[in-house]
Every structure is written in C-alpha cells, then in structure tokens.
Length: 189
Image 1: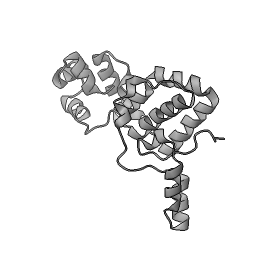
Image 2: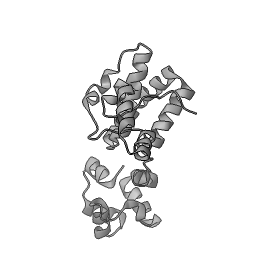
Image 3: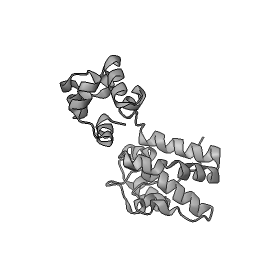
Image 4: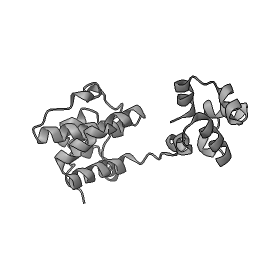
C-alpha cells in the first residue's frame, strides 16, 4: 500500500505525517510525489513513517518491491498450475482469490487477461458457466497481438510471418478474444 493511499484513507496531510513521524517534510513530500522511492529509504525513516501511519514497514514497501516476471514465464506458471491442480481446483482457486481483478487493477493487463482467458477456456472445456464477475473485462483487448516466444523465434529464423498466420489459425478463442495467441495450454513439462 503506498503512502498517498494511506494518507487519503486517514485524511492525513503530508505536513501532519512529517510532524507526527519526525521525518523531514521535504523527504515525505518527495516520497509521496514519486521523486524518492520508498524502497530507497533508510530503515529508520521507514520505521518512523510506519509507526506514524500505524502500518507495518512491510506494508509500506511491498508494492515497490514487487517484481513483475516476464509474460512467457507467467504463462508457463499458469499452465503448470492447471496441470498440477487440475481444471476444477484451478478454477475454484483462481476465482476465489480475486487474482484476475488484482492483476488488472495493478495494470498487469496481459497477465490478468491471460488468467481470465484460461478460466474461460477451462470453464468451456468442463461445461461450466462463466463467472459473471469478469464480464466487464471480457471486452478488453491488448493493443498489440501477443504471440508465443517460440512463434516469434520461428518468424525470425525463417524471415517469414507464416508461423504467426498458422498460430492465429490454431489459437484458442478465449485467448484470442484478448489479442493473446495461445494454442496449447496442456502440453507443459
């Protein structure tokens, strides 16, 4: 959770936080406006701010410290989860966790739409109704078509876009709806 969100929720000003924490006003202001990353602050500064805001130090830095993996890695992890958990358990876990919306709200659109496409695909495969909670997201599309890395490698190696055309023909409709080309989600090792 970022400091500006906490300040908004608690109706606290930057000035009041500076006074309450003992952290210089300019430092707090630079953290709040993004000039200084919270993860770059000293332990003492983090401690003072966390104590003044009545949150943990971890809560202050977790958003800044979160690492976004590559999209290919993310897709592979999702496919491995489906394989290890099974379709139904994966669907239950994903839908109950709210992960699709969480990723979308973070701006991780490719990951959130991939996960939504996977749940829609597995729902169709298992003859289950779609979760209506994500109807608004089902109309979302990535600006550019995302092809698997292997397809892009083939295009580069053969200096031809034939692999792209072939992968589009074989794409699973639930993924293609979001401009993601995916043909095989079960063949993972």
